[in-house]
Structures are given as C-alpha cells and as structure tokens.
Image (cartoon, rainbow, N blue to C red; front, side, top):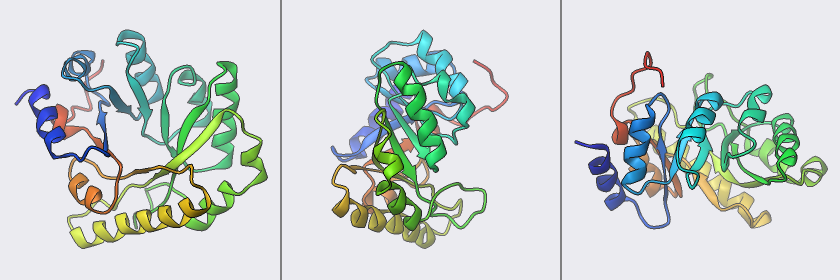
Amino acid sequence: MSIASNLKNIQTILPKHVTLVAVSKTKPISDLQEAYDAGQRVFGENKIQEMAEKWEKLPKDISWHMIGHVQRNKVKYMAEFVELIHGVDSVKLLKEIDKQAQKYNRVINCLLQLKIAEEDSKFGMTPEEVSTLLCSEELLQLKHVKIIGLMGMATFTEDIQQIRKEFKFLKTTFNKLQQQHPKLEIVSMGMSGDYQLAIEEGSTMVRIGSSIFGARNYTATN
C-alpha cells in the first residue's frame, strides 16, 4: 500500500483529539513529500542534523518534532524551527533549549520524559523528579521554553498487560500533575505496534513510523 493509503487508514482510526506524529527518521525526502501531499503536517525525527536537512528542503508549514534522546550540544541545530521536543529529561537540557531558543526569539514547547519502561536503556524521570522540576525556581527563570505535557516509551515486549500498565502509569501521573499545572495538555505515548492501546489509556499524541512508511532501512542515507 502507498504512504497516502496508510495515512488514510490510520486517520480513520484516530480520535479527533489525538495528534498523529509521522515518524520519518531514516526516510528519504520523497517519502516525506508523499505524506505531506496526503495532508500530513507533523513529522518526528530522532536525529537533529537529519531533521535540519529535511527542514531546509521541505515546505515550511511542517511542524517538526524531535522524538529522540537529545544531546545538549546539538540543540543549536534545531532551535530555529523545532516545534516540540519530546524527550526532555533534565533541567540542564531545558536550560540549553532556553538559551538556543532565545537567539531566535522563540519559545520552544517541550514534553518531560517519564520513565515508564522496565528496560534500563530507556531514558526518563521519576514522577517525583517531574513534580520537583515543574515547581522549581529554575524553571520559572526560563522564558523561552514551555512544558506542555509528558511523554513515555513502554517496554519493548509482547506482554500487552505490561504495556497497558505502563501507559496507565503515565496517564495517572499526568492527571495528578495537571491538577497543579493546568498548562499540561499532551500525553505522548504509543507507536506503530501499540498506539491503539495507548489511545485507550489516554494518549493524545501517537508516534507512528513503520505503519505509514514501511519498514526502516538503517543503511539508507538521505
């Protein structure tokens, strides 16, 4: 099936309140253009320099999301255009985003990454760390970042009950924090293999790649 057909099929399933981030990492410009021509405007990348190259070549009404782990020394390459950074897991990173956004007189939206998976390879903060950061004086001083929600990545497993438990944990944490911080509005969880489960558990943003673009070829270059 074509990229346009895949997109249409997914969009018929997604509730109106759920944002679809088309995960386009490793995919060529032509694939992104095909998705764009089919109406998709939100794209997610996990390598900053690859995203910057695509930003230069593609239409400027695209909303670019950085969904990978962010190295502080790379923030400067995306500060001019990135719409949302998904995986923020430290005050140090927020300070760097703020510093680089200030150069362009922008406010960059961010999601705090909660560690919900059991795998050690997954990054993220504890609920206590997230709560402390949201109430901190340090955050108040940052005028060029805005925290608008939480994100999390479930354990890579076929155990649906475990995945559901992890998604539920993220949504419960979000609900508690939102009572104190009403500006939190996004729960980003769910990918190609589990996005329907994530939506059932309260996700408002899903990151879908292979179900749109097909399997990834990691040896390909753009």
